[in-house]
Amino acid sequence: MGRSSRKSARRAAAAAAALVVLALLWTRRPANEPARVDAGLEAERVGAPAAAPAAPASEPELPPEQRPYVRRLDLVDVPPPGAARPYAPAARAARAAVRAEGFSAGSLALVGGSPAADAESGEFARGGEASRAAAPLADGRPGAANAVPKSTGAAAGADRGAPTSDLRSLPEAAGVLAGVRKLKDASAALARPWEGTPAGAALAQQLINDARVDAGVREALGKLAASGDASPEARARAVSRVLSANGLPSTPDEIALATARASGPPPQPIPPGVAARTAQELLAVQATPQEAAQILQQADVPASPNSPPPRGALEAFAQNKAVFQKALDQYGVQPQDILAILGVETSYGNNTGSSPLAKTLGVLSQETVNGRPTARAAQAARDYAALYRLAAEGNLGGQPIAEIRSSYAGAIGFPQFLPTSWEAYGTAAGSGAKNPWNMPDSVLSVANYLNGNGYHRSVTQSFFAYNHSADYVNKVNQLSTNIAAGLQRQSSPSAPAPAPAADAAH
Image (cartoon, rainbow, N blue to C red; front, side, top):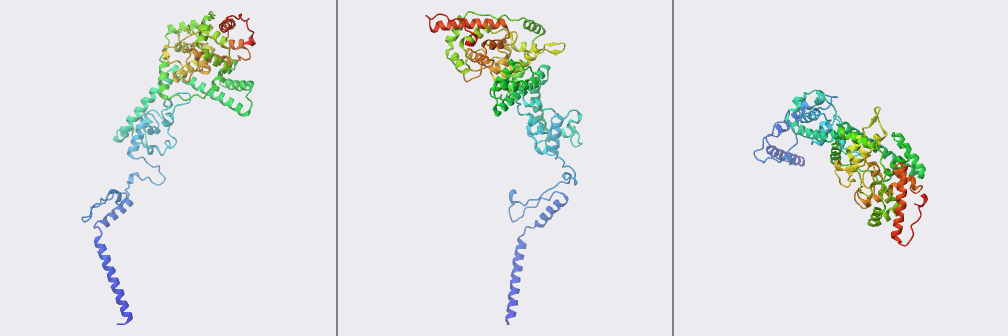
């Protein structure tokens, strides 16, 4: 056989062997493979479900994660070109349930719904109205009180033209609907005490106003400090501009009050639960018409300052020497002046008032003349808001709001501070909350007030800032002189009593 003939024979044998191998592999292919692939391709093309393949007789069925993936489409879910993507039935039902209850679809995030239900409107990308409302505000009001329903009426539950009743009746909507109703009830429980009544709406507005003023004063003082011009005159002018811009009087007292409040750390948001409970407790205390008439009558009678003997002052000093020394070191205020204030105000805590504070401020804040609020009403409204914040923060000695007693004008505690003054000048002697019915806290707070109202320029003027009454200033000055003599005798029994000190000597 020639060489070419042998080569041809070898090629023929190799081809035959290859055919045998291919034939063997073909016979081992599962019998349903063509049908399965064809069915999958057909499903991809026309959207019909692919037929489930029969398990091969000779091999076990593959686990789900190893089976070939066949994409299944439903033609009803495929929009025509340029059309908006429709919602799946469950998503439509959830969206309709939320809309029907008057909330935005963003509320689904709070009740376990799927963000896909509102992906088209973009509310979940923004956090959703209800999601934003869940965070507490800087003034302490719970954010859920601001979750305003997005739409109301018969169209509230309409979605893509589908009847609301049909979608809400779907099983998929049951869980979401229950969650939304729970959210709605919780939101209403928080919102009604704040804005459901005239008193609640007024309180909420006052809290907003106070927060705006405080933020404006802090910003103005911060800019002054950054510019290097932090003189008392420049600070007073900057605060005065903020007060005037917000409709408040720019008197020395108001400037000092706003400056003192802004000099402390920024207020922390009040947790929504605490805010709701405090608001409910405060707004629940309402005066009857007879009580309101009595409160207004008492408020029109000027109080006569009382000057007790210095014996109680000497006892108070002996029991709190360390605190008086701290007041002198920290604020530069003499013990006899602090004791004189506390003596004239409450006889060292023996007479702190018997008027119900919440009712007194509530009545005074509604006082009008010719349909316009009086200056006393404007001050009482601010004190009412300060009372809310103090109670929520625990800075009223732990007393329930309904049990707090004050003067006829709403002054509280040993130093008889209005709530706005206690909020700005109140100082805790220890590390806990401040308590106006506590002598050490009262000593430091009076020293803080006098220091912030010009004590080092004129002691008499700082007394007048405490109470705008010449009779009051005279009583405090005389008592201070007597107390100074008593303290001198205690420290040096044989020393003669000192002569009345001049104004600059304090």
